[in-house]
Image 1 (spheres, helix red, strand yellow):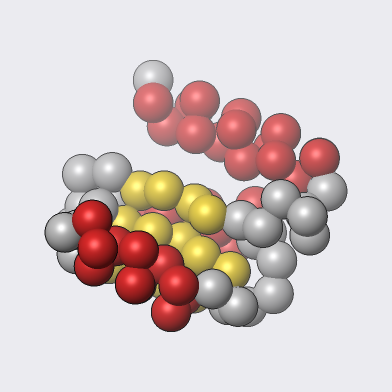
Image 2: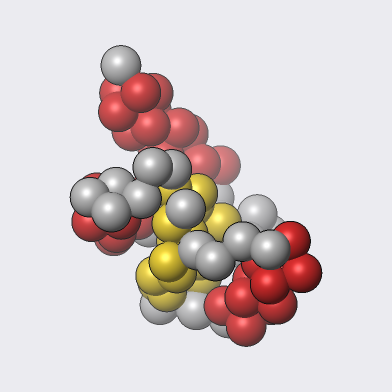
Length: 78
């Protein structure tokens, strides 16, 4: 599994993953999740991971960013 996370939280994500027995490949994105950068990280991770999860801080991201990310992944699931 691959994870794209905001720069503030990778240590917390690593700790949670460890407790769950999961060893994800983590890519840090500086600042808040942006559609362009998250998509690039996800494409890279999908070369070696079956699934990719993008974890953004909902308090810091505009609703428009969330909708754009959802559209990107609807396209990739097809």
